[in-house]
Length: 360
View 1 (tube, rainbow, N blue to C red):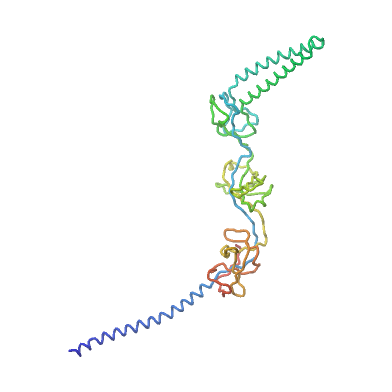
View 2: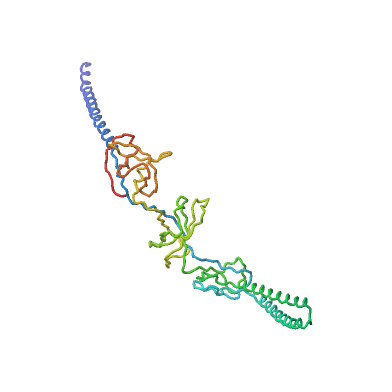
């Protein structure tokens, strides 16, 4: 019985040994493809895209935001407190310079002026009679001079009274359009009360700021282009002046321009996108942005020479969204690597996927 039981286990042992051999064979067979795949993958990683550098036109442009302003704009306020007795504020209408817009109560001032004018008339007659008496030695020179002094004093008082009366009137300071009025007849107003606004109708100015590094490029007479947020049409403006000083908080230079073409779409206070063309280079060397390798103190690119990678320190200029100007370090005709930069070392052999020569 023992001999028979031993022979019963023999087939099971043979099956286990066969399975182990098959697994060992598979393991050995699988190792070879893995090694081959690793070699292929390594070769694929060294394939890079490159860009052939050539001179191209570069227009140095800066885009900033700005605001439209009325060329002349004033908040209308009265100089003295009082009660409004007359209003001439046609909302949205044009008025000429000097037009009476608001009148305050001034009956007391008018009465005082009338009183002074009567006193002046009496004093003038006295002065005329004393002039005749002086010729006949009927009055002393001192009395005559005192009368003349009183006469001049009354005239000065009348001028003061007229000034006080003028302060009860609000006149249009220039030709312009009246905004929305904030008062009504009978309102008690003070010098801080906003009556309305007046803006020049035919002229607009544009205020914007540029970064400090571009401040030397902004000159009076320079032409600029701007657009509105709700309108793709381009408008022109001419630089009038600059602040002549950099803002210490923002490090920007404030610029003011005169809008050349007036349009109904241009309203004071509107937001604008300003485009400045500062400089134009016909033979600029541009490379794709991804070709630049930033370092702690320098910037570099990888240039292909004799099929191998070489790291070159460069200096950059104007930066765009997809390209960067190189001012020093490369020459026209150089081939710059733009992909696979992390896998390359100095002297690495290069395998190209593509070489681009189109303008950026």
